[in-house]
Image (cartoon, helix red, strand yellow):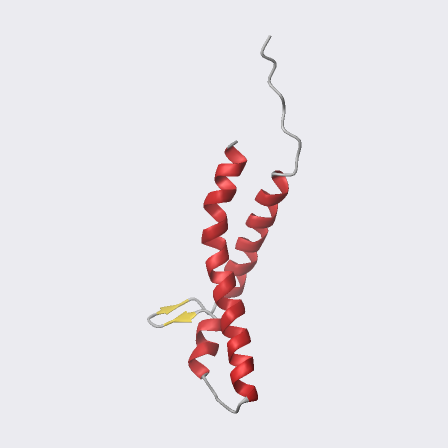
Length: 86
């Protein structure tokens, strides 16, 4: 039960930056096809959120969050121990 609770807590936290990175990269590439240069999207894509600059460590953060979600999700596949009620 503890693994499920941990996974439910971690997934939204980890999914947010991953979704932001995916969406901003896709939108930026799509806009470039129409000769629209939205450089601000590229800054968000790489971890620059206005006054908060995570660019030096943003890829490491994304990698660690991805690994945490993968490991906690994989743990959900393990068989649970059954408790004897005798």
